Length: 310
Image 1 (tube, rainbow, N blue to C red):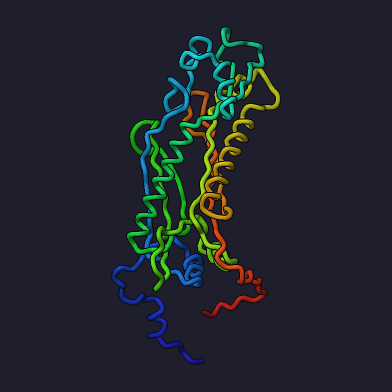
Image 2: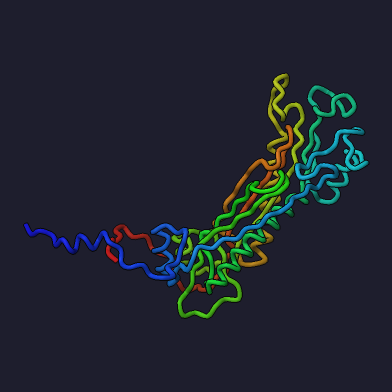
């Protein structure tokens, strides 16, 4: 049996000399290969961040959206019943959940619950994500990239008070060598493989579509887990459903403004800004708006055997 050449084996474990200006990325090996198959090359890892001081829709509530209980659960001098009717007439979601013990505002206001859409907080969160994405796009433009793929969004409390949130967007900038620059780089949260499939089906990413819904939850005695009462909990599912519904509507409007539809939508449900037993129920939907660029390509046909040779 012929012995393998030691020089050949040695070469497999020693990288070539480093290339100056080699691009960085957060792509996996499979993603990088998929991107190159559609003629794009990674040109750098890009990110954008923003720090927002957030506010609430409720007077006297600050960031947490709390409502003072003094004066029969007044809201800036307005009775809660009147405020609830006013919110509904304005198209906002608002619902009350009386105490199952029969207590009212005057006897035990802390047992009385309600849900209320928090538009001010939703707007602040949306602006934070928008700024982070815009700054990521600026970095991609500085690299002469045509777009950024695999974008991920996140936020957390990193600096400042509990009402301060830090937003972060990360992705990999890609370029098509020899093509003129775009007016603005395309952005997508699709992976490299999904982006390849998207191009193969005749669609191109038009931008990131996003929807947000925030509902402030002041739990009644049942929703807060009082062991003296049992039964189905209607308040929390209603808050989650209302937040998701608003996020879905916002996502559709955002996608329609940029393209012909939204694909690769990712959902996040979370509690945000908990104060005591109350919290803000947040629903975030992020996807890629797409436009058709070709109707002639056929979808990739599945193959029983895939060659491992390049």
